[in-house]
Length: 115
Length: 112
Image (tube, rainbow over all chains, first blue to last red; front, side):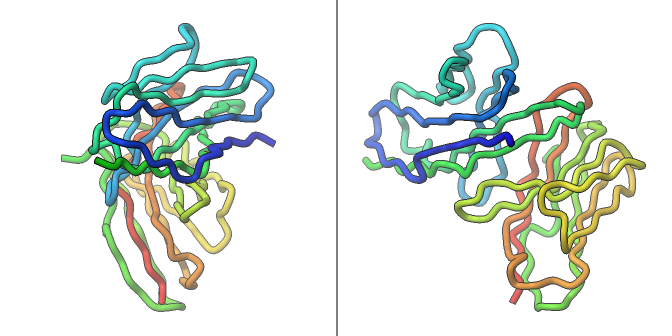
């Protein structure tokens, strides 16, 4: 069965420090890959996505992610974190085997940013 | 104005009550989804709909029903609410052939 793993439940970083959030998936083929961010009281906002092509993708708010097929990973990175980045981050995988566009979500990583 | 609107944003109700959560969208997408979010569990799919006449169960459909009243409207009902249905509920939309989903701001439901 397909699965999405975000091994870090909670990460704390200092403002200005770099950030990497991990995401691994279990699926036989290359899926569609997404990172969403959820700020308190808000819905999920798409940060970036990977469908095919260049394995390093750029997103909004200065985020980027790299797809590594050999590691079944799609880690999210930011070189310098801002206090406003404090939120919960979800990795999601879309398989589209039946054309359903269904997404499978990881359990999320909560990011705390300290001054 | 939001592209995907959920109402109400918050609801507190009692066990046994019938509850309806509504979702409307102005994106023109044909596909709509209902998820619930629980702490530590991420988002789990309840129901999804490809169009008005196509409704499908998701991972956790027991205790829920849905209605797709129009392409732009997709409602989620709890026929007899129970406390373990307390959660944050999200509606999402997508366009056929495009995997990206677009989310509403959520409905926080508390069942006492």
